[in-house]
Length: 378
Image (cartoon, rainbow, N blue to C red):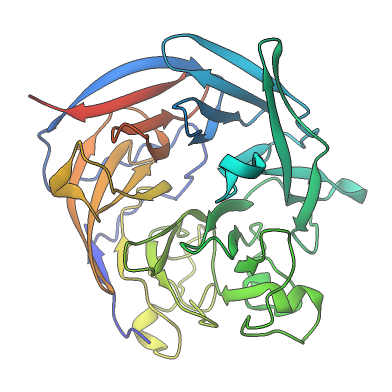
């Protein structure tokens, strides 16, 4: 367990973390501002949320309203047919997209989205389907749902549903947020406020920490999370997430098997109505974040860079900031992390991805959100 966190920009004047609210404008001071990269605008999309690159350089991009597109650099944007109907409201809609580790052989694409339930409820789901392309268009074959948030609840916030495959390709990790209900993050009978671990087909691995305690509980890999919107593996194999805190206290966490990260019992922020939440330091039995931000940045998207264009940054993490309107570079050394750079991007950054060319790609949030390509400044 980590007993303390590194708190950046400590302030008692943090604005409410409306990280997914379009009007939020937290603009904390950057440790460095000069941009060592050139920004090229490539395309624009309607509420883009996530992207992943295909082996040939094309990219699949999700739009929250329910459209999946296949973007071909400098050529075209084509809608992909066969996308499930999504419950589009608030923070809900079409979410993440990742490829199966053996995509070159099986063409399997994984999508996350929000589906409606009974009585005005909703929840995130993950499904997989084969991507079929031809000169006439692109489509997903029969979609197979492999995971659902449980239980479905009311409201339209805090779904999470970011995905990452383990480096060996044997396990799929999914972030499942607390749905703004607080206590489910500590409820072992629910998979809300958790990171879950599955096989690529949706099965439950027998070495999960709570295996054998029921179908939902057996999925859980870690608990006590609020709203994790980024998940990625570091070069050394460690799993990292970041998540939005409440009023202050955004976090970056190294995820450990069976660990409890304390929300809503502890947090480095407070409730929106001003009620205090004890800090992590008061309850050392809960894992504290490696990084914490107050004022908030509303982190979204997460990668560990491994390309050749920015060689000095290999192994570093990159994340976007929604309310922070920034791109952050995080140096990670084992279990330690520190902010090395924070660049003002002038827009809410929803997604960060590395292209097969080694460039860094960003998606801006909202209507007319731009796809940006970052290459080294010469």
